Each structure stands twice: as C-alpha cells, then as structure tokens.
Image (cartoon, rainbow, N blue to C red; front, top):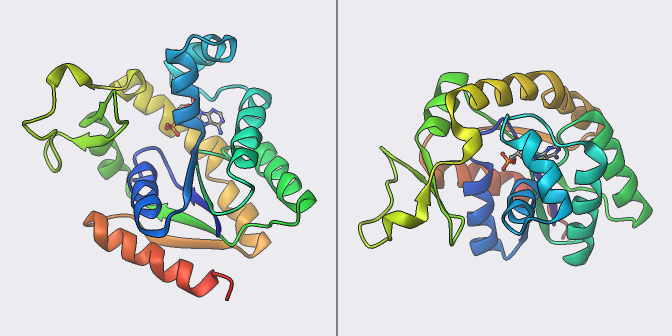
Length: 213
Ligand code: AMP
C-alpha cells in the first residue's frame, strides 16, 4: 500500500506511522526524521535545513523533494507511509508526478483531524527519545522510569514560538492540500482525537476499504 499520513504538526502522524510499521509492515518515510538525522550528522543539507527548522519554517522544497524521492525509491516505491511530505501544493504535484511516472499512485491520503487546542497541548508536552526517536507526552504517555533521562529531549521546534509559527505555516501552506487530494479522489479525513488504538482502528478502516485485493 502507498499512503500519505496528513495533518497538522502534533496530529499524531509519527505515532500512527509507528503502529502501521509494526502492524502492517509498511515502511515509514518521514521527511522530518530524515532532516533531523541530516542535522545530527551535520551534512550540508542538514546545516541548511536547521536554519529553517529551528524557527518552525518550511525547508526549501527542492531540498526536501530530493530527500523524499530518494527515500521512497529506497523502499522500492511501494508499501510506504509518507509522513510530513508533501507539505505544499508544489510538493504534492512533484509527488504525483514521481508516482505517476512509476505507475504507483497513492491508495489513500489519511487526514488526521485534531482541534488546535489539543495540538498545542500535545506539542508543548511532547518529548522525544534521542536514541529511538520514540515520542512521549508528559501527561498521557511519560517516558518510562527505565529510560535514561539524558536521552529525553524537547524538540527545538516544540517551543511556544516555533509551535505558533508551525501552525501558521500549516494553515497557510499545507492545509490547502486537502482540496488537492480531495479532487484527486484519495482524501480520507478521520478523527485524530482519542486513544492511540482508537485512531489506529479508524485508519485501518480506510486501509481495508482502499487496499488492492
Ligand atoms: P515534522 O517532523 O514533520 O514535524 O517536520 C519538522 C520540520 O522539518 C518542519 O517544521 C519543517 O521545518 C521541516 N520539514 C519536514 N518536512 C518538510 C517538507 N515536506 N517541506 C518543508 N519542510 C519540511
């Protein structure tokens, strides 16, 4: 299956992607994770991207396009969940072109619907495990006692000012893509609020309805 997980920052895309990897053996392609790795490794792309990411701005599209296409190609152009790409209309058109050229169109764009106050709460209380990339929430899913506290950090772009900026960028640049995918006939909005497994079950319903037989 070829799926895009779509939604604002803090919608739970990363969490649901992890479940889809475990339960459906899909491959997770996250431009955010790829970019954060590039920053850690101090590659030329990483050094450029950091300037934008720390402030909650979008990284220039041509940089992300190359990384995304390389990653999709690496997983064999199939059985993937895209998370965080595309984020602009231009990127959506690039993705459509890339997949159409290889005759592997998307099965579904699952759009997680989450109200803004829930998003702000999730992002400001999100913590990440440096080693595993696992996400925690300070109230609902705190890091377990066995985990070394030195590994737990708050993403630079999860500070209040960057959160505000990311949401503004999302509303302006990314949300309009819903219309693009609706016209393409592959948009499936689902409620992204509730227990992790409840949300997962809603995604499963979409996958069962759209997966090839
Ligand atoms: P994420 O982990 O998906 O929340 O992404 C974190 C940050 O990485 C974003 O706020 C952007 O700065 C950058 N980023 C990730 N994906 C993209 C993309 N498709 N286009 C531009 N910037 C991106």
